[in-house]
Length: 450
Image (cartoon, rainbow, N blue to C red; front, side, top):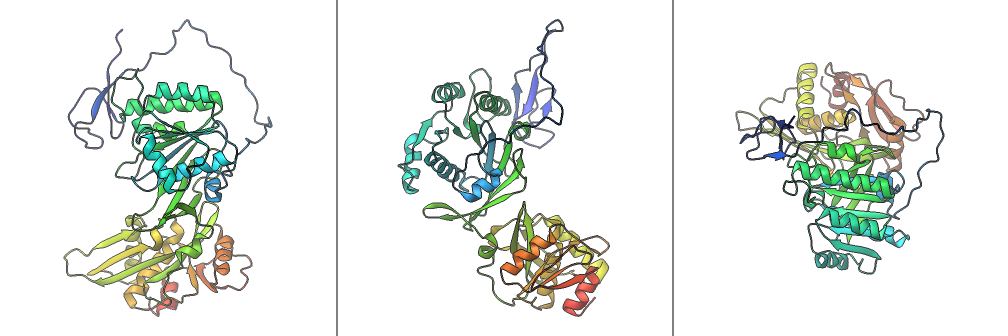
């Protein structure tokens, strides 16, 4: 029986029974391409080999790790580089992915690891020019420029490096896959070959991936499932800070972050992000609140800024940077419904200073405080931090790792904190704690309303 053809959208990966000009899933035009059908699998009469089975009590030594000497990178990797691991790094164009990985390759190579950097986007001379700008021209890193994955795997098999960096997966192509480089079938097949090679030969492979305009890694979603670790390199072009965030890690904690600063000599690690994010903060400014958050295992203090102004438009503007816009709408609705504080006819602008992105629900109280401070033109005490989740009923819900948040705040000179009641604060030495049961009580005490 002949196998049916498969048609796949090269943008979102959705499958279609036949070719069409427009993808029904994502709305992209001329993105559906024919994909070679998968094998029907082994014949019913074929017999496979028996695999070894162990129990959950079997003890194995933890995997060895190689330190790069870059503390922020080692933190995100879970303590260092694990042999035979596959790591996917994504980020916006020009954000510094290639710079970071070239610095990482040079650092690993100086510790004694054999490293190869394979570029499919730039010529070898361009990579050398970047290395000279970064002062890495003497680092013992092997360099190659190729897009044919068959040739790359043959070279890796002959060189046997400990670390191979592939920049990028969207430029790789396999001659046995009938589609253009960057298509869903090419990306999936190339990633499968690289991951299989990493596991088979014990080589750690770092794969660079392009991202779509929505911020997700371009290509099939299965790409992120195939690798061991997925890292996103985040940041705003107008800010010098860059955040390396682990969204998946089989060898360490997820949601861990490493903070870097873009300088003329490349990326330098930031050892105390909280102090740097708050370094330019003005004292006693209306519309400013300090949020004590948790990123992975690390407490990070960031400044939430708000501006509320009368609107001349029929529909007031809601502009958000660094925070989910849906979360802002929810908090504004709770303030109006539960506290009687309307924002009708007012433009609202919300920003997280330093280019940081905050997704933790614990930031709700700091966001509400910044909004109320801007609306009432009343400054929040500059030595106060806030955190807590706001429910739709207006109640303040406790959040995790309260002690770590307070310790970080005390270390940076903050002397008081506003947090939900029933929080497990423990011993907050030198900190005055204001525990609030609901948003109405917070508004009444801080702003004399409610």
